[in-house]
Each structure stands twice: as C-alpha cells, then as structure tokens.
Image (cartoon, rainbow, N blue to C red; front, side, top):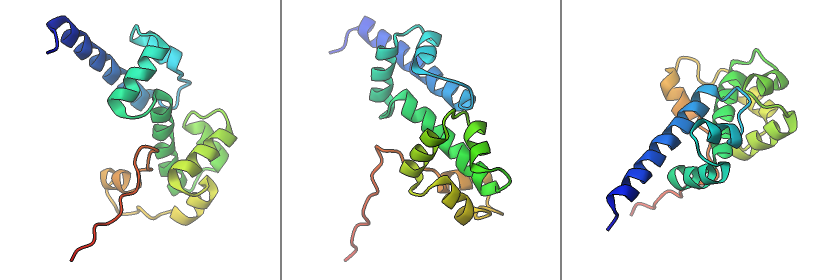
Length: 149
C-alpha cells in the first residue's frame, strides 16, 4: 500500500511533468534543453528525464522533436517555405538533425514530403488534419490489421 506522503510526492511530480509537456507544446520553436526544462520545475535533469519517460513513454527531447516535426509537416504541406526555412522556423538548429529525425518519424525526407504531400489537407479541418498526419513516434509500432473470418 502506498503511503500518503509518497502518493502526494508522486502527484506533485506528475503535475510538474505536465507543466514540462505543456511548455514544450507552447515553446517548441524556442531553444529548449532538458536542463532548462528541469530547472523550470525544480528537478534535476536526470530525474526529469526518467520520470517523463515513465509517464509519457519517451524522453523530453524525443517529445520536443516530435512536436517540431508535427509543425514542420504542416509548414511543408503549405509549400511556401523551403526545407531549410522550415527547419529553423520550428526551432531546429541543424538541418542534418532535422532531416534525420523527420525521416525517422515520417518515413520520407522533408523535401519528398513537401513535394508529395503539398495541398493534401486542403479542405480538411485543421484538427482532423493534425490527427491524420501525426507522425509515428518510436514507441508506437504499426499494428497489423486483425484478420476477420
């Protein structure tokens, strides 16, 4: 059985983790690192990383990069910015890291995505487009379709 102080500590840590996740969602285009995120919630970087991964299934850095890639996908679909401009617009400092992570999550390079996916979400409400075009994170394996007999 969990003691009251331990449960209170756990709930306080979860609230801090939500604040970190919300900050990443809001400030994804800003220079963020685990040290700065941890400092903002009065945790050590190591403790934040471990607890964030336990709570959300991925590291804070991975979550940040996924947010950046999601936004990059929307900008690339618009088609009015180059891949380099999109890279810097979403807060990435390295075109190589951006391209590598984009390819890992989306399954194609940013330039290929821009060329193939331009205007595919025209006429679709943005909330639906965001869900449909969401990149697959490392922890999410593609499930095979069950066979119906």
